Amino acid sequence: MVNRERMVSEFVKLVQIDSLSLQERHMADTLKSILGQMGLDVYEDGAAKNIGGNAGNLICTIKGTKNVPAVLFLAHMDTVTPGKGKKAVVDGNIIRTDGTTVLGGDDVAGIVCILEALRVIKENNIEHGDIQVVFTVAEECGLLGAKNLDYSKIYAKYGFVMDNGGPIGTVAVDAPSQNQIDVVITGKAAHAGVEPEKGISAIQIAASAISGMKLGRIDEETTANIGVINGGQATNIICDKVVIKGEARSRNEQKLREQTEHMKKCFLDAAKQYGGAVDFKYEMVYPSFKVDESDDIISVARKAADDIGIELKLEATGGGSDTNIISGKGIKAVDVSVGMNKVHSVEEQICIDDMVKAAEFIISIIKNMK
Picture 1 (spheres, rainbow, N blue to C red):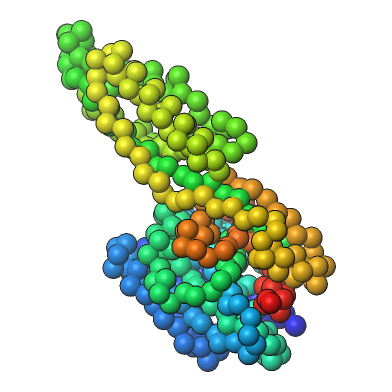
Picture 2 (cartoon, rainbow, N blue to C red):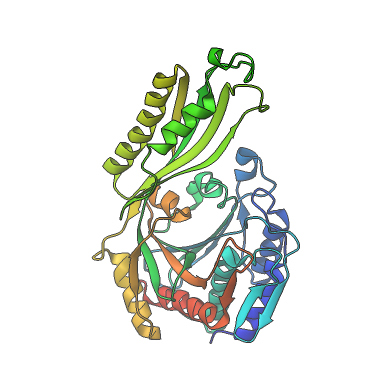
């Protein structure tokens, strides 16, 4: 039922649209047109105004022909950099980047799988309950689209976010919370050659703090990273200010709190040792989510996988996605693989067979909603 050639053609067309975060206008207009050609109404919410972008989230509801719970399928429209001037190369069963940009399969693959499933449902008059489709903006820069989605339009009980890697049938059911950490270290400027004793080096404070900090893989549930450090003006000036950005993640809220406090203490202790000051702030970027193996959504996914001959593989992940946000809004949701590979790199690629199977999985999920 799935039209492989149609999927490939649409994928190549869509990935070549420039659609960086907060610049998704062309992609949104293209998807509006495609859905309109299917005879579907599309609502664009007001997220653009809230996040400083040029397009909002797209919401489309397809009324059902049978009385079962509504189901949501979601993918995001934006891509990371380098993402301008993308050229997809079809090489047998693989679609890859030309090596100068990302491919954009994250998450055009999810979009194309959803669109193909909708076409197959319509072309074959397959009975279904209400289907809601959401294409979000600004996922890659902090899940901003999902955070600003017009949830008054969403009533689906279950959500399948088509934005994961791994073999088809891989479903992320356990994902962490993330704290974004912002630190400003203040020292005292002085001439580095004439009177360095009168200065307090913010760089030295930062180095001391970070050198004593637990970073990287803390345990199977917890990670931490210092990702950005900015400071200093010249080699002959004792640096009086350093700005640092980092993060901590954990699937265990207690461990997340402990790791964040540990990082704070390292900065404060180092500042005290050298006589400087620290402004340490953190904000939860997204909450964790966990779906139990006995939940109804997993029963649906397992039966759907069995029907098309794939293995359902439940996994925990260290990444965040729109799934975290919609789960926090009361929608029972999981993150589903569309086969994307080497994402966020110029080596990104995707297997056509995987996309076809992911579209079949969506159709099977729709058929198995009870």
